[in-house]
Length: 142
Image (cartoon, rainbow, N blue to C red):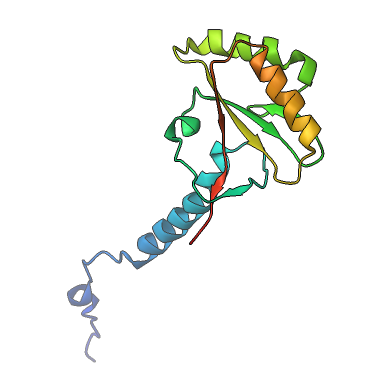
């Protein structure tokens, strides 16, 4: 009677299979691509469309002061809801906190927001002694 032996040791595959790792990395890349634009704008508003829009890169910085007015008339400073009466004091405190040299505030107003609410918000911003007000819009595609 003969002894049966296996030669499985000769069939060992020493190559690394990177396909599952690539699949996971592509899924993570897609997730980050979808979520990253949502992180900058804490309040979702439909910006008005302008033909001659100017790019304001300073609005995307972390220490920029962004005020948003939603369609239902709520006012937000960053991601926090504020009253229009308290807006000037809160902007002054925020600018002192970040020690901004230029006093630029960016306004993101919904295209369907009440005009009076937007003007009240602008008055509140101006009461803080803001020297520049940048109104953010979407650029119209040609």
